[in-house]
View 1 (cartoon, helix red, strand yellow):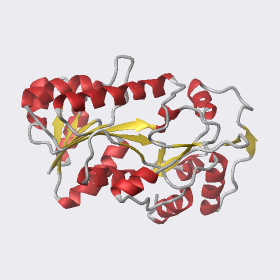
View 2 (view 1 turned 30 degrees about the horizontal axis):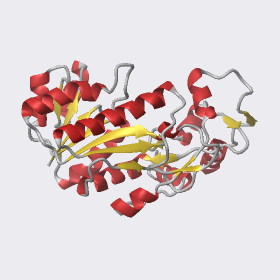
View 3 (view 1 turned 90 degrees about the horizontal axis):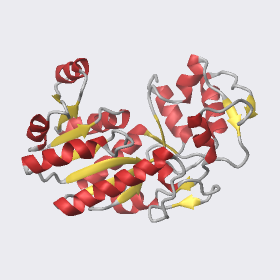
View 4 (view 1 turned 180 degrees about the vertical axis):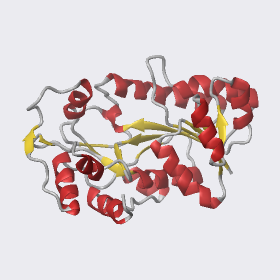
Length: 286
């Protein structure tokens, strides 16, 4: 079995680690020569997405495709590169997964959202994801391909968690009463993607998130406790001028249901909350 990854993302690498023991091989896009060399040194196929013929060759025998590159003002770069290559190769992979964001739901005032909730993205980035999801579904219908979208919350894991921020001395603990955020351990996301590859459904959307939306200050405080450190002092979320990204982050408050992924894919997060996830990262030396 072969997985083609458009984008060598943190999540994509976790999926590679999960599938490798099952004998999967991997082709990964790389525009930078040094990145391509590193991929080849690791035993993977490196593909320049600007080379349509090379991309078509790599896609010809791909069983699954994961698109993780973010959309730009002109749309999804994976769609622009890969659709002509898929047509050229006359390739029909069993599964195409598009990594989207729970930001497509916009602000819900802390209420629960589900995959069939209206999409009302409030940011440019979220709106671009809505458009990319729509475009990939149209490609799936037009080309007879099984395309699934995965709406992801904040992603954390080894090397990318509150533990790292505390160790680096850059953690803050802003507080906004009533505000919660969704998150998911990267290995749980990889497990959800693998479950969908094993049971693909054309046009499906899944929220892959843990069971417990929580305020960010609680996560930081718990991580500090695990490290035996004093947590950073609590401060008002708007005590300092906010960057554009931070302003978007704090403007949206929602709880995201993972019930569909559990029911359809038989998926259960190994880390149902940030507590189990952070404990596992620390135990593994992360």
